[in-house]
Image (cartoon, rainbow, N blue to C red; front, top):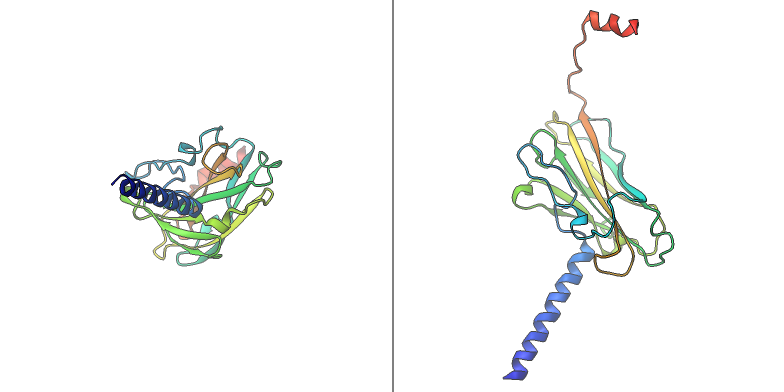
Length: 216
């Protein structure tokens, strides 16, 4: 009987560690971009909830390149997540990770559609509960770019909502890993970008306001 229980315990332990090992290389759990509370939707968690050894945004940055100032409903845009850190310069086994989402700034719901460009390096996961309308792009195991020097980049396509109208915010988080495994000793970065619909009406200006501009 003792051997049976021991055998079951070992199997359960191995199963739990296998699940952990498979989950983490697939990226962070959903809803960890640090997006603030918007339109009744609660604030998301942050990467430094787990990777909390250092101050956020120290010695580096994460950004979303290619976000248009104005978007056209239904159009597709090639975005690039750009992550840089000076802290990994002397670490040969450094690794990298990110999470990206797009949010309607009027109600907090997910906005537009993400499409994977490189299925070997990136994947898309769904949010749940309060974040169920949001989609998240994460790096996969091959997308951790082990050993690659700063900066690193991941491409992703985003198609704007066909209805147009809302101002959309992109929220992104990045992690520069020390290559030791686990969650200690990593650096966390966060960033955001904004795009507006091309059909958004310009603010009206009176003749008086125009003359006032030229008097300055």
